[in-house]
Every structure is written in structure tokens, then in C-alpha cells.
Amino acid sequence: MNTALSTSLWLPTSKKEVEQCGWDHIDVIIFSGDAYIDHPSMGAAVIGRVLEAEGLNVAIVPQPNWRDDLRDFRKLGAPRLFFGVYAGAMDSMVNHYTANRRRRSDDAYTPDARPGMRPDYPTIVYSQILKQIFPDVPVIAGGIEASMRRLAHYDYWQDKLMPSILTQCPADMLVYGMGEKPIREIAHALAAGEKITELTEIPQTVVRRPLNEIPTESGRDYIVLHSWEECQKSRRAQAQNFKHIEEESNRWQGGTLWQATGEIAIKVNRTNEPMTTEEIDASFDLPYTRLPHPRYRGKRIPAYEMIRHSVNMHRGCFGGCAFCTISAHQGKFIASRSKESIMREVKQVTQMDDFKGYISDLGGPSANMYSMHGADLERCKLCRRPSCLHPKPCPNLNTDHSALLDVYHAVDALPQVKKSFVSSGVRYDLSMHRTEDEAVNKTNALYNEELIRFHVSGRLKVAPEHTSDAVLNVMRKPSFEQFRQFKRIFDRINEKYRLNQQLIPYFISSHPGCSETDMAELAAITKELGFHLEQIQDFTPTPMTVSTETYFTGMHPYTLQPVFTARTQAEKLAQRRYFFWYDKANKQDIITALRRLHRLDLIQRLYPSGTGAIRQNAPEAYQQEERRRYNDKKRRGRR
Image (cartoon, rainbow, N blue to C red; front, side):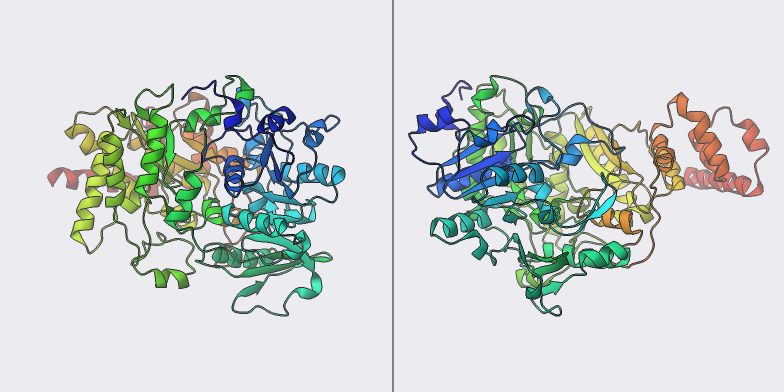
């Protein structure tokens, strides 16, 4: 695939390119906060190609300049149907700022990682500019930034509860979740002559309505949430709201949500049913070039480097991790591509000029959920559980990994493929889950072996997230014991096949429910397992997650019970430094802190040398703990 191909293979991005297409009009113009990469992992490209397949003329304006005379917003004129506004593949505030609210020095979705090529909250800024210049043209906002802010939400960067983004953003409508179905319906309705103000019932859209349309109470197919004003006064009301929001986001077909906000009502129309295999194949099989637009002239776009030789096999995630936005955006039900569609894309990757024989990722939101669903879908359609894996795997969940192995085998059988890797996150609690079907158990054991033996590019990244079962329960993650079991499997297979691979665990500090003592124990446990941690992060509250609502309200939305959370910079630093217990600069601070916490036993575990004085002057409780450990070792030795 020649990277010097004509621009005619991409959606046009300039007036000259539109003229080269021979168009006398443009139906839809999409303004994107990301560089234009014509790839099925990039939202603007997907929506553009979906609308193109409907026979519409679609153009994309990537990363318009909002600081000058606004010529980027004027250059293509007004579209016949609507403007689309897409902030980018990442929330702009996560993209711009660290967990400490410090400005990042790069942007992975911009050529040469150049920062400052999009504003904070592009959904708001772009929509305001478009409405200022073209007040009569409909503006449709979509993407993860808009989706996660569709109702009242806590904004960590402003440190306050914010109303629906539609109260600040003048877009006429917001599309939440995966947008192919709603955007087609909107486009067809507008093309048929309907007015944007008449489109009030389209699933997976959010609209403003008069207050008097809000039902007096919740019904079977709709829920009336506490108003924005009530949530400002009562964090308990906000927590109660979130439980409903999450449940409806993850239902097979959720109900409509209403929230009074000032002088208007925010109406979140129900979700669509999960995409069928035929529908998701149709989206992925569109004529993407899989390349950045030629306008970038070979500049490096880091986000593209990560996906250029990768293939996404499904959407959705039923893990329901408390800190993750995937299920809130994509839903918990898995929409899987057919094996044939996946193979077509893999073959397209093998034809790229720079392909050297290695598929970088056969993955998805969780790499090993491909083709999985409930054995009895009628039970799934009634289910409100936000997670199919927590607190334990649902007995109705079919965890058979055989379809996934079949895809791996087919890809690896291609003569152009030397090796295919799995770089997306793997849920080891899913592949290790014991079922009553021994055939499934054998298949899943084989999956673990083949994953580790054939699909690891030297390092397998997994996400236990913490070592404390109490914290993991708040996170909706499995017990750390499962990670220990998986590590034993990993080590055994490495030894069996004489591999020299590393297991790289991810961990989070300062998550709701996590204390400084929990982090100290994490440091001791991971040290004893032989890890010097590198894949770590401070918890960053992002809109519309259980963890964020717990952080803001101080209570768990499902129990309304208080949950401790580290909030100040000092509290967060006190937790984070335990990741780096081996750094000499942290040693004295950690020892001082552990003495304050009366955990001399953890000092001994982290720094066993040079602690004689600590042992000699140890309190009785510490001496008892030492004797218990000694006796345990003796018993294990006898066994």
C-alpha cells in the first residue's frame, strides 16, 4: 500500500480536495480535535465513512485553528445537512492534563505529538464557533467527551459538579455511545426535510426539551433523575442518579432518562440494542485507507504508530471496572466481527508497505472477550448488572475462548504473518474461570498457554490494579490471588518453552477505598513477587464512572455508604511513593510513614537490611508477627 496515494482516497479536508471530488455541495462537515487518520479505530473517520456509504458527500476539518480569524471554520462553507463535532478519541482533559492537573507536553493524536492543537473542551468551543458563523445549520456533537458529559457530572479539572454539556455547548443534539446507528438515522431524517428540532426520539441521542415534558415520576421505560440543582445541594442525590445512569447505559435496551437543569430538561433517549455481527462488519469493512491523510507529509502521529498494524475484533466490555468508561460508552454487551471480516482487515494490513510480518495487536477493549455473550440472551435482556464478572462471573456467561483461538490460528496461518501479538488488556480472571463444562475449561487453559507462548511480544501487560481485596472490591476487580495464580501459569509456560518473557502488571494508587497502608502492603507484596513497578498511575477521576462518583460524593453509588478517598496532593503523594520503595530518595520518608502507621512489619519486609534496631525495639505485636512468619516458613518447609 503506497503511502503516496492520491488524496482522492481520503475524505476531503480542504476546498481544493472538494473541487477534485467534483462535488457541487457538501452534505456533512465533521470538525475533529484529532489529526485525520483514515482508520476504523478513529471516530471521525468511522462516522465519515458511514455517512459516505449512505451516498452523502462528507468532508473532515481536522484540528481547526480556533485562535485566529476562524478561517478553518469558514473555508468549506455550510453543509447541506449538518456539522459534526468530535473532540477526539480521548477526552480532551485527559489528553491535556496529568492526574496532578499539570499540562502535558505532547499530544499523541497530533502530528509530531505537538501540543496545543486543540482547545480544552473542543466539543463546546467548536460548537460555539460554528453556531456563531452558521447559526441556522444544525450541529451534532458526538464522541467520548460529549458522551461522558451527557448528564450532570463531576469535572475533576474544574473540581465541581457540572450540568449536562448541552447547557454549555450550543449543539442542537448530542450522540452518545457508538454513533453509526443514530448518525444514519439523523442524516436520513434531515435529508427527508425534517427539522432538527423535530428529532426528539432517536435512540442514543440527547436533546433539550421544555421542563413541562418531564414525566411526573419514573415509569417502566423512563427514569426521572434528581435535578441538576438538587445534585448541587446533595451529593447523595448525585450518587443516587449515577446508579440509574450506569444501569441504563448497560442494559440490552436501556430506558430514557430525564433531568431538569435550570430552565430546560435534558432528555437522554434510550440506548440501541447491541450491534449485530453484520452491522459491525459493515462498519469495519468500509474503504478505509488505514493511513494518516497525505497532508501530514510523513510526520509521525504517535497514536497511529500504536494501531497501524493492529486489528480490533469487537466492541463492548462486560468487565464493568469501576474506573473505566468503556462500558458507559460502548456498553457491556459484546458486538463481535465475523472471522471473515477480521481476516479481510488482516490481509489489508499485510499489504502495507511497512509491514514486516508482525500484527501488533489482535484485540479489543478487553482482548479476550471476543464472541462472548450470555448462554441465554433472554436473561441478558432483562439484566441490570453493570458487570458480568464482578463480584463473580455470571453463571449465564459463556466464557468459551474457542472462537478467539480459531481467529488466532487463521491469522497465524497466513504466509505473510510471522507472528501476531495481543497488546490489548487481557482479563485473566475470564480465561482462568472454572466452569462446569470441562471442554470449556480445557479450551481456556489452552488459550492461556497459546497466548503466553505465541502472542506475547516479550512483555505481557495485565491489570491486577491493586493487591488489597477490599480495594479491588471497590474497583470491581478480582482478588489478587487470581493474579498470583496467573503468574504461576505464566512462569510455568515460560520455563516449559524456555521463553524469556516478562509479566508487567498495572497498578493504581489513590483509588477510592485505598489507604496509605493498602499502598504500603502493595509495595511489600509486589517486592516479594520480584516486581519493580513501572506501569502505574494515580487515579484520575473521569466523567461517568463509579470511581469518579465515589470520589466526588464520598459514598458508593450502589450502597450510599461512605468510602475513604485520598483527595489532597499530600495524600496522593503519600500513596504514590510506595510504588517506588526501591528509590533511595523515598526510603526515609516511607520508613517514617510506616512508623506513624505502626507498621514496623512492613518496614522489615521492604527494607530487611539495616533494621536490627527496629527489631530489637519492636513492640510485642511486631514480635508476635515475626514469630508467626517464622513458624509459617517452618511449616511450609516440612511440607
